[in-house]
Amino acid sequence: MRPRLMFPGADVPPAVPEPATLGDLVDDLALEDLWDGMARGDGRLRMIARAALLAPLTDPAVIAYRQEVLGDCLRNAPAVRALYGLADQVLADDQKMIRGAASPEARLNRSVRALETFCVHLRRLSGLAAANANGFGSAGFTRLFRMISDRLDGKYLTEVEALLERIDFEQGIIATARLGESGRGVDFRLQEPPVKGRGSTTRRRLKKSGLTHSLWGRHDEDWRMLAAFRGRVLEVIADAAAESADNVRGFFAAMRDELGFYVGCLNLAETLSRSGLPICLPRPCPPGERAFTARGLYEPGLALRLGGAVVDNDVAADGIDLVVITGANRGGKTTFLRSVGLAHLMMQSGMFVTARSLAASMVGGVFTHFKREEDASMTSGRLDEELARMSAVVDALRTGDLVLCNESFMSTNEREGSDISAEIVGALTDLGIRVMFVTHLHDFAQRMRTARPGRSLFLTAARGPDGERSYRLTPGTPSPTAHAADLYERIFGERLD
Image: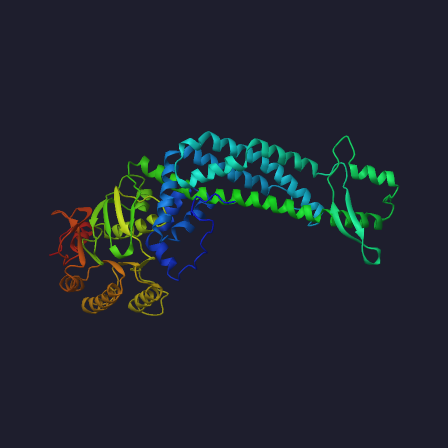
């Protein structure tokens, strides 16, 4: 029994091994900030958010399924938090139970105690579902509430509680067996336990027959014999009770983890909303469309770090396989690149995205190649290090992936850096891989503009006459300068002629 709030089918896809380039992706896109915003200090929520964002979906039907569930969550946040809190409390209470010996009798007692506690919480779950079901319309929540209503009605839970009380065996245990070879007992079967206040039919028959034997417990061997007998008789019911407890425990664990993803989304949405920032449910498009159109796209990590409004961007790159971004230093180019990467990861985890609207083709994976600061511990040159990281990216790439490059191959001269960039970008785009490239290599940008006039988009970081940055990117011809003179003037207080 699973909640199925993340996947419409009964089977959860197997986990995919993390790529060798994952550390770079996390650092380059500042994913830690996003996960922290979703978790709000809760380690489990952070772990759930991390797992979801790093396992992008490629099936539009599953993305739509999650978006529908998320829409329900955004409209019914208190109820969703209550359901998550209940599941979390159930598992916390279960963890407090003492795990003792592994004998059948000990396992039975432990499972009965767990099931008694679960029944209390299942009644609460049934009440929450009944009180809130009418406010939810998604297929995921509709199925969950129907399952709770059908399987956890009051009569059923009362019968379960009565059964648990009887298999405490406070009135003793009655079992039957027959003699096997060498006079040993075989085919042990537990009989219906006696009801408090009256003996069982089997016990009355045994007393009447006079076929009785008493153990007085005067020797250790008597106790060992009795314990072995009880264990042999109780083993089957202990296994059944343990399996039932595991099933209920597994249901609550799955519900906590699946709802945890949506609670993380609620946390992030509420934080952004307090800053007046928009979110939207994006439209995922097939990979072959090479779609990417956004209005009001912004980087959520920056918004979380600043705790307020940030500059957004509009971009229309449908049918484009290469976007080249040039312009002023500190003009918002890296921030824009992060916003694109995060938008794809958020969309393909079934989340909202941080924009007023967005339609984008799904990608198999997002990969990054950002410049690195000088590292004194490096045993080779910076260019060698850049080429090695790009080689690792290429090894992991597949047709339909997205590569985000930020000032790659700037560690060499203009001509060599342009040659390397042009060859790599040309090979990648020819293989059906989309590339967004922030660069100050004017020669490279001009080559791409000449060679791919209909397949490339060129954006420029705007700069005012006084050197002020608007942090907006606009379509235009590649900028031949990063306006480093502006930085010189700002730092040293004089113009550089």
